[in-house]
Image (cartoon, rainbow, N blue to C red; front, side, top):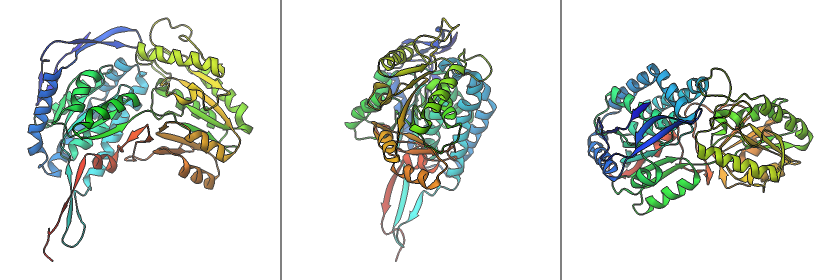
Length: 475
């Protein structure tokens, strides 16, 4: 069993102020695989103090100094990819092939995007002939990251914060802490100055709340549930710190009459990826009535033929969901769906042949209406709801009828229709015809999906203050 009780504070690995052991569970086996310690206020205060002390000098370093360290970090990340893949697969149940290609790969992709953006980023702009606008680091930043895409979110926060001259305290999810612990090792190996990067293990009510309300923290960047995002915003309000939130989603995948023949198949596969544990998953499939029966049959076939197995198993399949809490929540929502809509694949319980582990059957509901629980609530498991529509206006209305606004999807060969609908969807991102987003593209949402944007130039700007200086140059 792995023992990862120490925290990384002020350039060194240190023991917790007091022991508070927390068992990390392998979701494929339901057995303990590691132990960490949850921090308390003394640990939080020490990490914030280290970051505050380091900020004055780090914020004044040159772009070249920061770039050299970030490039060194990128090299270490690439060299130790297999360690990271194994850590994420163990802690949160990502199948090892998916962990190597997509979980680790997401980190590499975003590091590369930030290095490109940072290389030519302008921290000074001439507003008039005599007035200068300066973009300066906001200060000490608390980074609170989730368990479902650990490296994707740690990289999206830590790299731009540090690149812009901020100092940080990372609190990875206590459910999947091993990858965050390993990332701290990478930062130490890269040689960042003491206090620039700090890492604490802890839970939301403990370290998470302490960081959110701490008077010496200037910004909180959080990814997780909308419920937790609201709590963090309230905790941060007393000190008026900046809060950047990337929260839940209930993406609509609109399949028009002329869509590609395999659009429904591709949408179901995308919904089930990472065991459905993605905030941007297309979990509501909106299908034109002329293609509806075909789409239902196709999605049900995908569900029935999606192999579910342990994270350590090679090949294409989906693994468990992350925890017993998540498993029970998903089972409850599937049961609700079975009373609301027509179950065409999956359902309650584990897939056949699996009697341990938090494995969920890929599940498809048909004849869903958008007022049903399974259409409104973020399930965060491999569960797809299929809704028919007749007109463009109806499709747009259904897609927008949600408290969330992260990612929507459009499938049509009519370019004018595709662009017209994209303009009317109330979401931070709209993916069309399966074309992925470019490196450095802004990631974030509308409404209860949060605020702020991550990735590339947009991610750098998130950690900067704007200062206007008059009389910079003489007339």
